[in-house]
Image (cartoon, rainbow, N blue to C red; front, side, top):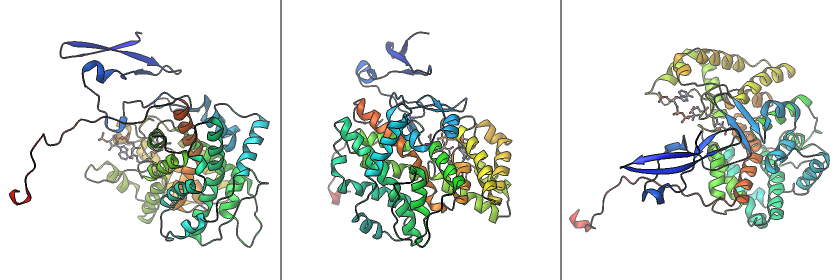
Length: 428
Ligand code: SDX
């Protein structure tokens, strides 16, 4: 196999190096394309064929349905690790030993207060505000109360910013949900585990002592691990490109939250539940929704199906589907929505349109069923996705900064008007 690619155009030949990743992925390095060809660039809407960076964090094989964080399979991590361990692994590259994990959690707990003034910003939102918009705003507002997190020119400063956001983000998530429910804005309890503390902040009733439910905490921990990173998806690419201008970590994360909000991306988990509830209200008529999904004149898509990279089962969807059955059984919940989801999946997997386009259930198809069983409101589903994705965003942003990646600035092909003179208004 050669390590060069040749482009021939207009009788000229141009050679470009071919780089190979640690999993034998090949990429043509076109860094010199424009200068070598006197101005020719490439165009690739949605970057379907274009890599933005080299990264050592997450590996996906879309054909084989493989997902690994720093070389560890998602199946093993979901089974054997906890979310804080996985966060450390993604960000720093290795699973922490006991001492490292204890220190990491202690450093996070040190920063788990949020300035009381932040509550005034939260209070300025109407209860009808979508939690993703609130969370993106609060994450950006945090900068004003933590100005030192903007300048991360040293690894020490970067670590400081990282533990601060890992500590404060879950508080903002809990406050966002509690504000909508009209509950007092509770604080965490340093004696609890990281995910247990998140659940306590979200759900503790003001008049009751917090009761830990192992099944719920385990399910939440697993869901957060499954959402923790996914290489260069839309929101991670947003975090990277915003960070490439040397905007601070919190500003980059705030932008990533907004990108994740879209129903084609993280917002799909909310859209899936709304779709399944619509099908249930329609008497379970899945065939009508399948027809809508295939009708090109209808903008409706089968939410939770299809993926830019996975052309096989999304390994996370497989794990979440099994977990959905287990959690509902353990909690003694009969949810007809789960049966509708399974029926829809079966139909789609046997439908030529979906088979031809290699459309399989993705991470968002079943996750909402578990969130619902855990008592999380539908509008908060994408916030839970953001909570899980936080360590992945941080890891990718840190890698981009440590690699001194250049500012992201794609080119374009101009198709507008050619040069023309100004015309006075009474001449137009
Ligand atoms: C996430 O990138 C990541 O890694 C994201 C993510 C992560 O962890 O960060 O995995 C999380 O965002 C998962 C995806 C959640 N979104 C949805 O479930 C929304 C529904 N899915 C689609 O909108 C779509 O599948 C995308 C956006 C996920 C992927 O779109 P692509 O890669 O741009 O594919 P496409 O739109 O070009 O579709 C190819 C064909 C088209 O038909 P043709 O023009 O070839 O006839 O497949 C069709 C599409 O119309 N198609 C669907 C469909 N998804 C694709 N048709 C009906 N229902 C769908 N869901």
